[in-house]
Structures are given as structure tokens and as C-alpha cells.
Image 1 (tube, one colour):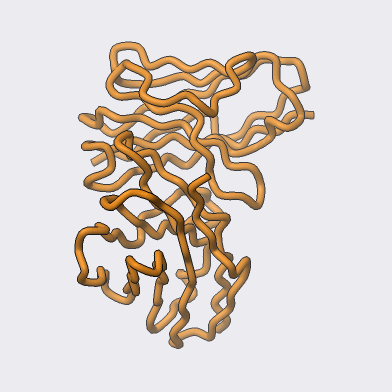
Image 2 (cartoon, one colour):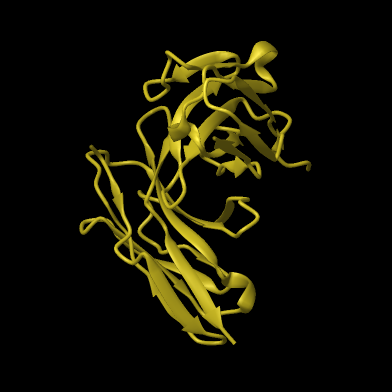
Length: 114
Length: 114
């Protein structure tokens, strides 16, 4: 089965500091999308950042950036200047196949300490 | 634009009863997904529609789960009869172009089967 692995079930960071969440994935496809989604207790799944596999340049969205290593099948998320509102469950997600269905990792629970 | 609407937000039923969930995607989004998220896990795709046709239902337990998307707009997911292991959050998502522009999720329905 083609999977997405998040090896850190929980992470914590001090407010204003930087934290990196890890993700590796398995795929036999050459073109696909990778995402990080955030899920706060409200259950709303919110898109944080998106990366197209054929683009070598790492995606950046304000305080959020990724380190995409296609050959290593690694896709980590860096959160800079962490804020209390960043506390949530973070899911690494890969699109699969021509149907573009999403395959989720098990998630990393991020706690931000004041 | 309005988000993906789901109802009800919570539902508690006894095992062997039936239940239905409703989803209204973002206007113009041709693709609609139903995901099941068991506590502590990432969401798992149950069924994917493209307009009113089924693209992928390979992980839908068809002996008890059914889904439809009449007229290619809103969708209903039904469970009959429910089992204890169906307790989960059921998330609906939609996309404009099979994920090329990202996926938008609803807030989900939390189902508890007792």
C-alpha cells in the first residue's frame, strides 16, 4: 500500500520559536501533489500549504514553509514564529492516482506553549 | 464563498439503527469526497464522486454504507445498520479540478454508535 508516514505523534514548541514536522511518503507516481492540513478541535480541516511534485522550489506561505526532497520522498513542514493559534493536529497528505484521492498520514499533534 | 456545509454536527445512535449525513459542496465544485476519520487516525476515503458519477468507492463497506449525489450537487451518506466500529467523524470535501486547486473540507459529523 502506498502510505504517508508521520513519525512524530506529538510535538511541542514555545511561542515565537520554530518547529519542524516530519513526513515521508511512498509513491510510484512521478506527478502528484503534497499538502499539509491543519485540524483544530473544531474538526475543520484547513489547508496550510501545497506543493506540486514537479516543482523543485519549496512552497512558502507566510510563516509556513516546506522542505520537499523528491528523491528521498520527504516533505517536512516548518512553522516559524509559532503562535498559540497554530496548536492543532497536522496531517501530511498526498494525492494519489488519476482520481486525485487523498492519502493521509496519522497526524502530528502540535502544542504551542506560552 | 460559502464553505462546504455538513449536517448534522453530532449524532448518537444505537447499534443496528440507521443514520444519514448530508453534505453541500462549494458551488461549482464537481468533485465530492466522503472521508471517515476514526479517533486518533487520519481520514480514510470512503467514496469519491465526479459530478453525479462514482469515481472510487473501493473502501466503502457496501453491505452497510451507501451514498448518492443526485444532480451532481449535494450528497447523502447513509449507514444501515450501524455497528460500534462506525463511530467516527465523517468529513465531506469538495474540489474544483480534482485537487489541482486544493480541497475544501466541511466541519464533519461526529457519529457515536452505542
